[in-house]
Image (cartoon, rainbow, N blue to C red):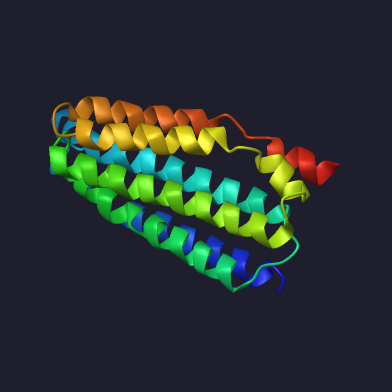
Length: 191
């Protein structure tokens, strides 16, 4: 089967997750700068999560530009990814309202970790369908950046219980790492 319905559905789910996040933003309690400053942790958690969802949307788009078809395994792997991405608004709100608290910071990392694992599984399911010699398999290579992201999340989660600010710094570092465009798939599509 083709990729159109899967990508359209995925785009919609990610768009809804972003919409839910922005609807969770609350106005400051007052009209002074102190009230606004008190809401900064909520705003920063929103910005980071928006960037993460944008990264997943962009990479998902590129991934499916390089494939011709999907099967049941790919559909379920994609749903697995979307499941974790739909938890981002919940963890974003929890982190924002409890800035630098251990459990919200750790759970945020767990969701990011499992979304990263799910994306890796999705990519592997697509490679299995299209073959190890396909353009997609060549473009993905060893997925070093994917593996490094998962490792950094795995370090950040327990770190959140001792130094939540350090865990947050690792989450930001992974996002920055992915903001640098990954051109492997685009190069494969052009060839």
